[in-house]
Image (cartoon, rainbow, N blue to C red; front, top):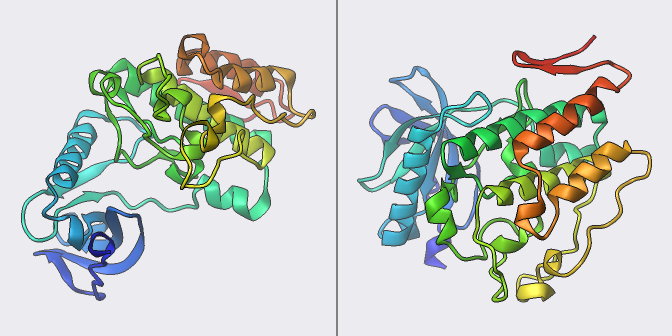
Length: 295
């Protein structure tokens, strides 16, 4: 249980000189996340710290360093930004920006399926960020409602498992979040396709499926199971999408959920197919290089 211990930082306690904890705001098995005040930035920020039991773990430290490399390489209006990293010392962590707004997951949990006027511009923004990553040779590999902060524009966060396309191709699963990871990320022994940019298209499609229907596209088995028993996307077809959705949107999401990575539209192709769907909405929203506009 030592890996999951908390720092239990009190309000005002220094993480490093000039950076003080305000309150915990999340985390997982490997990381704790705190809202902080940073004197150098003279602003609020978010510190993502390795948990106490992970600070001597070479793999955890190496993965944190890889995340910093990704954050330093990638720069896009929809991707989370970082401002500092302390990889040495008693509390290895990354300082990233503090974003206001609920996650997409919270909105779905609160009200179920979201209206298309909200989901489709979101889809274009996130698809643009994922296509940018593909263009510069990176994959995100964890696109899901938890990792999208709803704002203007929405923001795609958490590059914990992001990596270069070359490194992704050499990776084996399971890698990601069960309900939103492409079949090639599931660690199935029969997998014949390397992990690459099509996995991000699949993750985006699974996220959009959840947003427009209020449920995930596949049933996910218990954590104690593996292979097809856990990852039904390896053997099942997606659940039906609601009939009231535009046919073009249903077809696009299902195309992006293809088990064959080569058959999936790229995120750039998805944007091209989303634009006329948005144009047909009653609000007459359109996408331009400057953003999503209503008319």
